[in-house]
Amino acid sequence: MVRITPIAWLWLVVASQVAFAEPALHIVRDKSGHAVGFEASGLPEEKLAKLTAGTRCEVLAVYIVEKPEEALPADQPPLLGKYELDEDTLKFTPQFPLLAGNRYRAVLHPEVLEGKKAELKLAVTLDIALPAPKRLAATIVTQIYPTASKLPENQLRFYLYFSQPMGKGEAYEHLKLQGENGKTIEMPFLELGEELWDGSGTRLTLLIHPGRIKRGLRPREEIGPVLEAGHSYTLVVDAGWKDAAGQPLKAEFRKKFAVEKPVEVGIDIAAWKIEPPAAKTRQPLVVKFPRPLDHGLLLSKVQVLNASGRLFVGDVAVSDEERQWAFTPAEPWSGSETSLEIDTVLEDVAGNRIGRAFELEAGETEKQKGPEKIRIPVTLGAAKSK
Image (cartoon, rainbow, N blue to C red):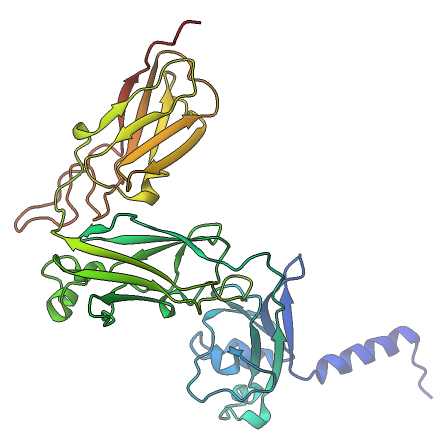
């Protein structure tokens, strides 16, 4: 008679569970308990390790579904994302965060690892519905920059601002550009896999396709320019776009604008008008431009330094259809001298930079790289005596 000790018995139970582990799906959560992905465990390690990056989605794929137990359309593509291997586990993290208010389905086909064709009847599935939090108000589009009603033919980018964080990964499905006849313009935007959101998720940078702006490039030659002088257009944000809580926008937003001749000269900082504030006050330092500059870059690429070269802390305001920049210090101005520091990546709305046009003329070559930043001395006005 063979006697099995309690410890040996425990080891046999664990070993048997490992040896006969069944493939299973699990939800991956972060430290806060939020769902961030899916993982499949109990898969044969040696076969899992031989999977190529391109075939991992055949074993594990994640989809958006409307209702529980809803059949997936045959042509519905899975979510894009990153796959990671860890022994007998295949983990999937979507390219964009899982969106509150959506229902997701993970589908595992372990039979693919055995060299068989994926069959729905053999699939292991797991659904998860992410509840939408209660909102005080529906999300709206608060502003689109440039704010002007007339834009140049070579307009490069728009900034879309929202009142609350938006869902990611669906931007180009809910944006369109219409001509004055109401017809949608074909392929107007540069559609990037990584949408250009700021850290808060409330500002999207939308680029007109550069290949349809620069002359001589194939997209412009084959399809034509996106915008043409003498015509009017409307940028439409449809109300079906969901925010980060999974709720649609409160209403559609439309920006109408007319198009003028292109702007094809670099920014001339000598043409800027600087209005110095009085010393020992919190009056704003104001700079006025002869033509609109890029709103997003004005917020980050123009700064104010004190006489020692240290940054002043304060607030920036851009107004007058992006023709005016103003800086209000958090504390009264100290000393009598200050300076503006401008990063030379600053652009106007057509992508022209300081001393350099976005589109070079035929035969013109790129100028030798100059300083990355330019400083303009500013003498503060006399403080008023009490």
